[in-house]
Image (cartoon, rainbow, N blue to C red; front, side, top):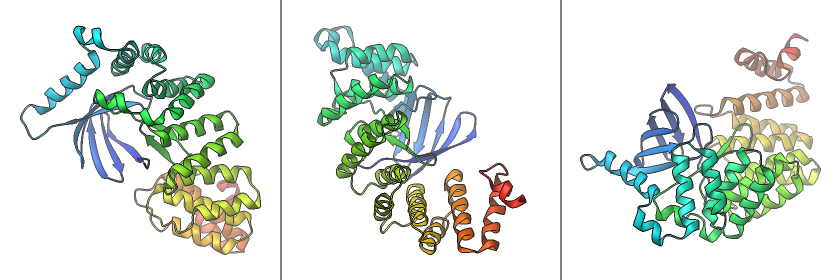
Length: 336
């Protein structure tokens, strides 16, 4: 029940490279509608530009003409024929109409349909996300809470119509989650929503439940570590170090957890241990988030300074300045 995570790089307009734990893939097409070739086969993706919400349909590339046939099949399932509508429950019909509206980039119409079908967990899940985007936070929370309370049914109707919606959520400044309908992803959305409202204690409760559901998921641990650090306190710092126990630098998320571990160690005055964690986070830089690497290097510079290793501190600051002269207070520290 883990989260998928990728970083997207634009190669040229209409072509993007997606990097994920399952390997690379290449997408062709305008924003909102793409054809993707990757390690899991080919698929068509359609959605609303800028929303992070899109649908994917695997294509059968073994037979001639498979691409067109599958695209038509997906769209026809969202249409519902006249006779099928006669026997389709109203809520389910509204869900499909909402998905079609999203497919056609009519976001306001889609939300109206999903509100009509809000008693269906799948509709509530999408309605929560769209309301979150529109900053209708109270309504978004109601939809997400309903989806959580009926999580056993999440995704069932989507599967029935071969729809695979996902949602992107910025877990930290450096890490973005891409989640599908289910309890972990919905709880994570609630955590982010509560944090936006400054309701950190409630967000922590949701995160604790999330960790009980997905105890080994590194993204859950990253989210929890970030919130614990914001609240400060020796108990919280100790918990952050525990969350990072045994972590290796395997991905951006693992590196982010090492970064938070180092911050917790520095807050406890354990500078040598903090330096070791940061150095481990920097041992692999290929394909790593630039924002994350800058944050790690800046933190290590601060640790070097507190250890009295001024030449090493300056070396890290100079590298940061060469990459981004306006980053934090790097320029002032170098010129001061």
